[in-house]
Length: 508
Length: 97
Image 1: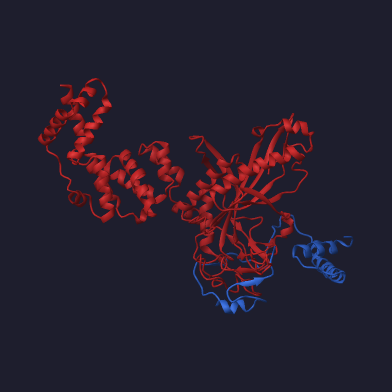
Image 2: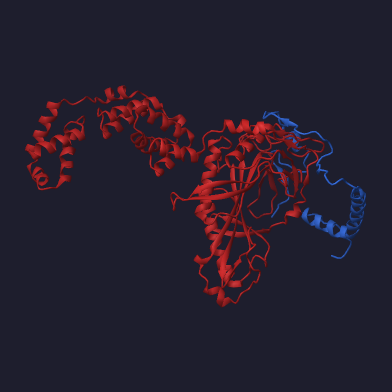
């Protein structure tokens, strides 16, 4: 973490400390994000990475670390890492190697994790994020590096406090992870959440990972401390690493909690970064608090050294170019396209893009088809997304093709269907997987003839003289009551047409 | 703990490995470590030209890569049989906490 401009004079008098307000402190946050890459086999062997299979059914001599077994790197894991690096504006290493990170834990059968120490596959890059609280303002978060490593197994500890054995499942051992490390550029819990949301979206768009947080496919550690102004200098509180955050909400809440906790601790005892080693804390979701874990082992304690079982991988410029060429449009570009080409406002564009590439493609096809991106956005943004949410479906599973949806919107645009009837038709189409025309027939929707509409309005005016007087007196809203009554008599009557006709007749 | 630099290292590694060594074991391990370091230390005497680039492996080839394809895993019973203790499904280890 940055501490170059900090003086090390610790333990200022407590009166000085108590005079400082929490809001004067700056929160310094860096994230380490572990992403499980979407490969079918493990990083160094051919065992399956499938989640949820029977314990210890997906292991072999390589991933359980039997003597003499030789790991061989997975081509797709390399490619997905390079793809991620390009999307995050990282430099891509021309030569990358593997190192052993040594530590002892029962779910690490080899006694070391194969990782990358000094030659990571992706070097410095950056990701620009927008925080919802300050729309339109981009913040650049620098990426320090991204390296490939293998995951460890899963420990199931006895929680009965009877001291029973821990159970170990090694299915996850050797699953490819890309660890993405940011610079300490993040300043608020909301920014941390925005960074993770954008990163997750990008990884989804480029098909690197499904980022399923429930299955642990995206895990995050947050390094947090405070810079606090004190007189003419500033001090930094000891750095805390919050481990294993597996939801956006826990990231946001744990950072908020931890910042407050560090401030209060500093006010109480005055300890600064120079007085205490980096601490590891865990987020307790139940207690909504961070709790102290073991002291962080020094990096040197991991005794990194090059893995003699693996040889370096060289990456050619032409390979990088090839992967770059295949890269799809990223969320940032798509938002821009939706604003500039489709004339959506930035909020609507962001909402569509946040739903994933499938929804963006669906929207573009419908908007192109009906030549009205505003209506396409209204209907997809409200009706389609609501229906998908209710039925817990993805856009790929949605029963209506963009072409069928366009057909419906064209009928709304040309006035054949008003909004309300249009929604009825949509529901009918979705429910029975039928075309707009079929739905219209089934619902018995018929165009209302002009004379029929006139006599309907005459009848309404005759029967509702009080309302008519109100409208004449300037109460424009009262007309809604008449439209409602008209729709009860004839649901096919177009509210827009009734309104126009009524207004004309009443003002005559 | 007072002792040779090797004894300090042995103690540190034993602590990280969560194993207990008695005095005699520390001493003999430290001696072996000193021998190994002495042997490897001969490399320091090699005079290298200025422009030599670091090399990390014993062989000069690069790019041993496999396709992302599945291979059969080892049957569970067979793999668990290598462990000191298991319940037929999981490895069993003494409680960590």
